Image (tube, rainbow, N blue to C red):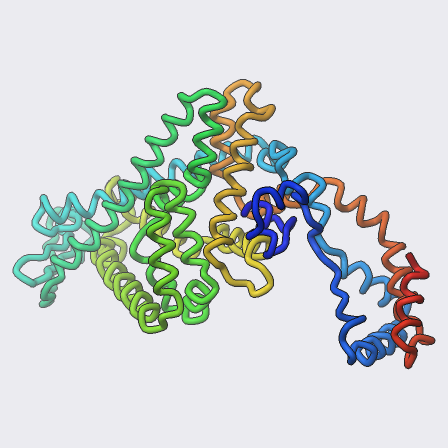
Length: 450
């Protein structure tokens, strides 16, 4: 599967026997079709190409030749398997350390943001915060908002507004508990896997990454940015359609399962194969996610009442944490790094139809298991604090690192070396004198350029 995903074997080769694969383990990334010699209408298509080519200026011809360059040279480095160190460790070392620390701080901040509302709701009768005379309290389906209209002076009295909010306390508790459960699971998993990884030896780390390749890529992102507000992304119809129809949501879910609960991945694929394409189910999931997002937004606005009623000079530490945590969760609704990573993965593994299938999803985890395990037993294992260096590489992994892995460092040089040959072949193939010529003459003209 991994060789198939890297583009080294055709789809038919994936189903061959082990003996057949051993005889021909690697096939070309692109197989040239002989449809020109089989299709009776190919000469007319070729004539149109010739006329198009001859109408271009020399600069346009050279530009078209350059644009037609493709990416098969990744096979020279076996898709990054020969030297994953350069790809994963590329970039400024101080910058990667700062980004890794930022990820850890986001996890701590998000845990505090999820824990504070639960503490307030279950231990202070629904009061989200108190700032002298300013507070919010939910009791008997009634929400009371009191604020100091005279600048929090000693002689001032609180101005209170009462609203009837049935089931508001129940919804707030439900949202807060769901968020705390997911974030706590992700944070504890991240802490647990990090301790195991750092205490293991070189070979044990490689085996660990082979089995849990994305544990340090996705789990910290969940712990540091998850909230039910992310359900609001399904309000964007075009984005939600791509998540379902292209399979991005299923692909990332499979990667999360493969990195934290591998035993559930097989069950997820079975469920996905039975329910994929059921529009009613997809619309139901999207509607439920949007509903949870709207409820979560309402709940967070209630807890953030002090932003508009209390001067920032009177905020306590709890209020500052709630405000910063809310901003962090809002910024994490759309994760641009994951979107970029999804596009690069889809380009490499998704095939021409630009949709994810079950074998292609499995290829992704297998490929990265090989990459990361090869990285763990490589030259980085001989350096000081190798465990921490590997952690920084995984925590800062993004689409730029992936592209560095997939493309050979000799790609540009090799492309420049064959650019003149490519231009000469295209120019000979699309000569004006082949217009109207028979098939044999066209084939001889092409063979003459070889």
